[in-house]
Image 1 (cartoon, rainbow, N blue to C red):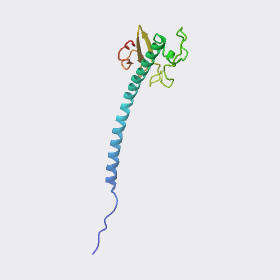
Image 2 (cartoon, helix red, strand yellow; image 1 turned 90 degrees about the horizontal axis):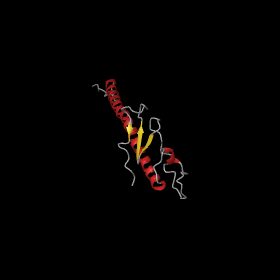
Image 3 (cartoon, rainbow, N blue to C red; image 1 turned 60 degrees about the vertical axis):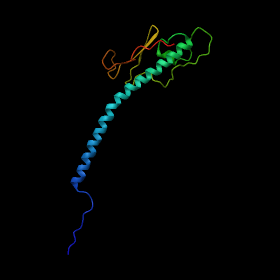
Image 4 (cartoon, one colour; image 1 turned 90 degrees about the vertical axis):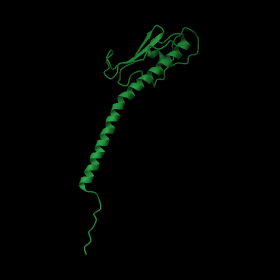
Length: 141
């Protein structure tokens, strides 16, 4: 009697099916990851806005006025006209003053409020992709 040997391994069709499945799964993951990069950048802008606003409130508490520019938050030698010890700089130099797309944040003092703006991915102010502080900052107490 002849015995039939059972072949070990996979057939070419089985290997092709596995490769196609891996390719489909890989492309789905890639689409989800690349779609989230824009969301992450927008979230970073919001976090930067919060940090800048907090630094401005500290500046106001110590100096008695809101900073006119973001640069004042980075300067440890702000002249407040009084002889006092300052805690400046108020903003950590590691906190970027540029958005994730490379444009400077727009910082404006409007009366007793702060307004911040990122021009977004197109780097043009006044377009639909701009990210503004959700509302002008409440006056610090």
